[in-house]
Length: 174
Image (cartoon, rainbow, N blue to C red):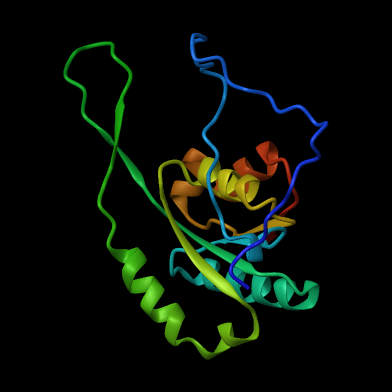
């Protein structure tokens, strides 16, 4: 089936944009996503041991619920040095070719044959991007692995920050 057409009733009035009006800055652009993955399970994945455990749990969760799996790899943003005195730090996206490598590894993985899945690459703050992908796909849950080590203790773990701010259930896998 190539697509569906939805017809409107003749008496239903459509809103027409006013060409003289200025666009509203508060409106966010709509991101298109594959409807087959609506209400799926979002999982953060970077190839680490804790993200592999989160992926395993998310596969089972998606399989049990009969939904798709949205695997998200977020490229880190690194602060650049600002020499202008009191200005806030500037963040730049560092090219991360690991997504391609992770995608090839996932494509060859037998354990992903149980569920339909896609790999989404994002750049930026991990918590924000996972929540944003969850919103775009109307995800039923976000699954992440717990952060171990000194970096998580100093800056706060991704799982902890995400659990505090997310608008949908967050499952943290130890």
